[in-house]
Image (cartoon, rainbow, N blue to C red; front, side, top):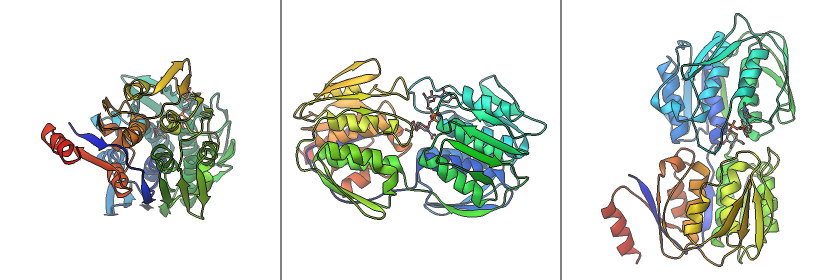
Length: 430
Ligand code: EPZ
């Protein structure tokens, strides 16, 4: 089994280039099946989740061709609305975007229920409510979501919870419905806006993405396009937090600083120095960080996908911090591992009460999910001694070249596949 082994203690210094946003890429890849013309997608991250989705759309007859590592050409002229069910797609959350995309184009979709990180219940009732409002009959049967309609018509839909997935899914189906759809209480995340921009570049008529009211005028057909995906807000945030955790100095390049505001604000409260450029941000942290309180919220609030990383940073602060998770009910599963490294954290309900400690010590731990896994790597980078992290397939779902980028910043980290290589690393860096 692949794992990371880390010798902690090195402040990270240097420059890192951010890749395309995973969660935007997944929505955009799904939406690319909605036209029979060729779509060229640039800045596509080369990660497990995006590659699984590419493989899955191949299976329903979509032609895909990577012209280079980060560019893919997609032609869905021969796509069919076959039932979608394979081992890979069961594991990723974004499989459900194919429901909205196929329902929009073919007026019928059958897709195996979504998996993804086990961070909470993750119901899909708001997606189904939206499809039903557009005139589809929608049910869960035999482990799959089935949605079908003679025709889709525009509707006024109020989301009971702010859901990224439901906003994206309804937006895709409504793009090819007759008449106007209004989504109220819509999610405002950067990847919702990116998908709207992508669909508009294919001829869709979507207005208001990025606000909580999105208006969509249905169109009969979409055409081909060339489109570059936005940079990954969470990958950038993870490297920003790596500077805070390791007391480093990192220039994070190829980002949209506006998307990082909530993270930047917290880092400033924690005593780090930030310098913003047009498409880069530099984070310098020379001292022990200050404690602060954090509550995760939908965008533009502090992202739930950054909650484990900031907890790792605050675990080393001078003082007591409270981190409250308000989006997913089961996103503190990494705290046990962090405690085994010396952190002093108690979880009470949806809050983690963190009494900062002076140092972490290396341990053999396991990544419980994608973002928590990345956060534990950050803990290992600053811990005394060696840290071994199992289940790194979770991390590699959504971070391209993670350990190599860390190594370029001065981290002592290796990806090993057997005990022999682990021992070799230990001897080399003893
Ligand atoms: C997306 O998940 C992201 N995944 C998640 O990223 C991210 O954590 C999350 O948005 C929040 O930003 C993808 O984009 C593929 P939601 P999603 O629907 O769409 C409740 C990562 O690490 N809800 O915005 O599944 C839900 O339970 C991942 O990259 C309903 O009640 O999240 C949650 O409490 C993990 N009914 C809240 O809404 C519904 O029908 C927000 O969930 C849908 C959601």
